[in-house]
Amino acid sequence: MHTPPRDFDEQALRDALESGWSLQAEPLTYQAVGFGSHHWEIPGYFISVNELRSDDTWGRLHDAYAAVSALQATGRDRAVAPLPACDGKPIRRLGNYAVAVCPFVDSEPFAWQQYRQAFVNLITGVHAAPPEVRNLARTEDYVIPRRDEVVTFRPGDGPFGRRAAELLTATADKTAEAFARYDHLVAAVQADPPDLVLTHGEPFPQNTLFAGGRWRLIDWDTTLTAPPERDLWDIESPGGTLHAEYTAATGTVLRPELLALYRLRWDLGEIAQCSFWFGRPHGDTDDDREMWGILGESLEAL
Image (cartoon, rainbow, N blue to C red; front, side, top):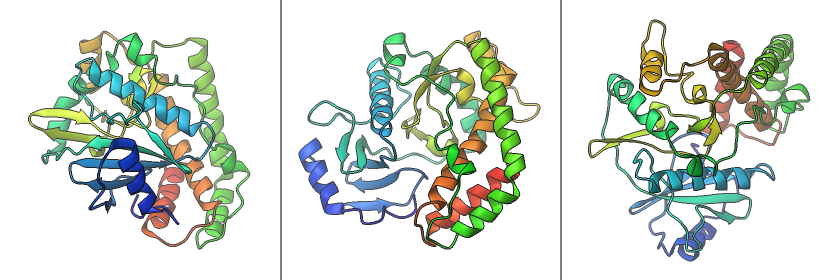
């Protein structure tokens, strides 16, 4: 996120890092990177802070980070995993937030073509996680969080609330049709369940580091046990060969209906999150403006 959470107590974060990980958090610097989590840096460490927006968020985050820690422990060096706190857990609660600490890794610049060439090896290493690792993560349920927010949207206090209401009303038929299409794809997949693997969820270049000759993924808060298509829907371009390369490497033939499901789910999930965002009090920050752009782009993508 571009800005820290409203009314967030950085001193409380410093205290949590000292009591939870025995780390001296000076200097503590906010990093305006990524979108979804908040990030701070202290010398040698990178801090992720996630808002606990529902009762289930804590458990999902804990299980996701536990799985990636176990993945790293197997010797599959595909991840920058969180460091265990003094109590051995991968995250600690700080009020309505969850805190995770990772070692700081300084990535070298890389081009898209380099990432593309490394992708299959990187992601197959994740997908090959053994059952004892895979079973630590939550299993895909195909539920789109905050889906109801789109239908029942009420504008929150702020400059984008009423504009969001007008946009969602104007596109209501298109959105309803997309949700119906998504439900049809889910029903088809549940009638013929796929094999499941450990998935990152967002293995995009922005979540990829290249350092010391190794490729690794960061931001594992979306980790699930799920069909492999969850990590592959966004990587292929028309006429590309990456899906075929994945099949050659794993023996898994990717299912078009699952690729379509995850492609559609991404846009519907973004619309639902933006509806939640603008249904709450908000302002005109960089984050608010980016969310407004995401809402328009996601509706257009449908």
